[in-house]
Length: 326
Image 1: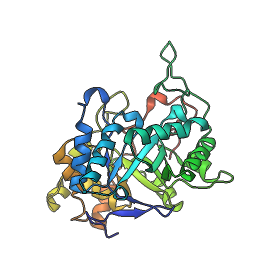
Image 2: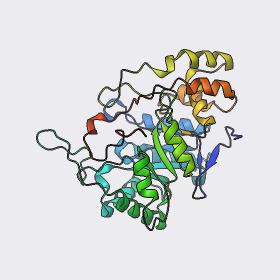
Image 3: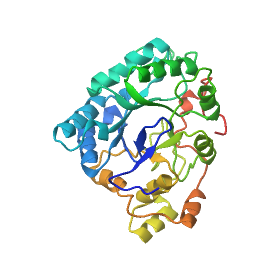
Image 4: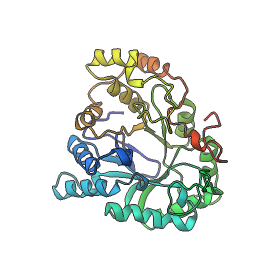
């Protein structure tokens, strides 16, 4: 793959294409100052990013939309240059709730369509506008999950021109097969967004997805924030890894750039999240070096097969995706 800073899109199975690096925009709403997401998205577009990953549940899509629209107005980019991925949250899996929820994203962004819309995780919660529904005792309120019915509602959104491509996130092999083997399937998922980095390389899921022409999009490609509520903090920080650091020295790069390059060379899309302008720039500087086959193998060998984002708080959900090997 001959990817450059100016041209780094890879094909999707539906004829569309996706930039291999994007800016993640998730941040804890309580600890993020208003406007910082907008500044970051604008900085990313200036540096050369054309792929922005967001979600209505992140509560900052308004800032993402403003940033994109301002950059279009400046003449820096056209709408078709930008690739935006939005997400369907588990409280809106009932077919009649799917389109109205996608329309909320479009209204918040003030855009006519999104480029990719994905099911954020395969576990349905009690339908409603409460993102994290619990009963009065604090127990999670789950809901019967019918992923095929949800998928049909998404296919209708694509037919209506509200979204260009459809995908999923945090799906295991069995859950992907549910959709792939659905009778009357109109559009297959083009992507599966999952945790993926040198300590969790997802080799088996990657092979399965490649066989079915599904692109893996890696969230937390540099490890993740160390929030013990939803992160397994027993793993050492990825960016302190000796091998990544020494390869960084060899190429005059950082451990983060080496970790990103590793996934890019595997054909995996990376969406590092940063609201720091210097790091946003640094994370994008991954097209001017490449790792040798031996180096790729040695990074692959760092795999500990342990998740950082294990979502254990929902491990008793019938569709919890991580009980199975992949």
